[in-house]
Length: 100
Image (tube, rainbow, N blue to C red; front, side, top):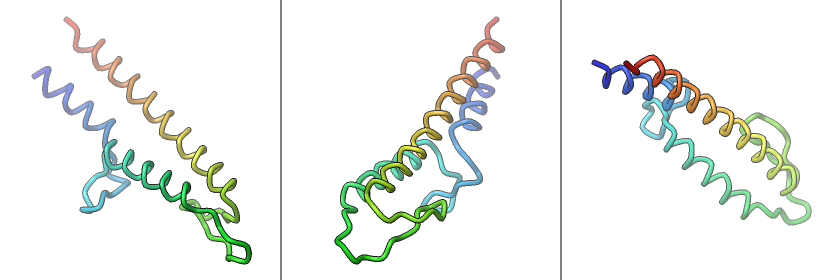
């Protein structure tokens, strides 16, 4: 019974029904880390030649330079770090409840 509760708690904090993966299932930490890696690769190869029209990032912000892209990526990584902190706190809380 305890193992089921821990597994359920971990599943709840490590996946999201609000973010679909490539199979349209609930995304999990691995899916998100893959997206971060792909975004990093895209940023590394995003040097725009002069005269190229700017684009928009996932939040709709105008990205006109590599600097702006990196700043947006940094902000996204801050959200990932915050979410991982929440996960760590949830695991600690679950462990404290389960301990005999």
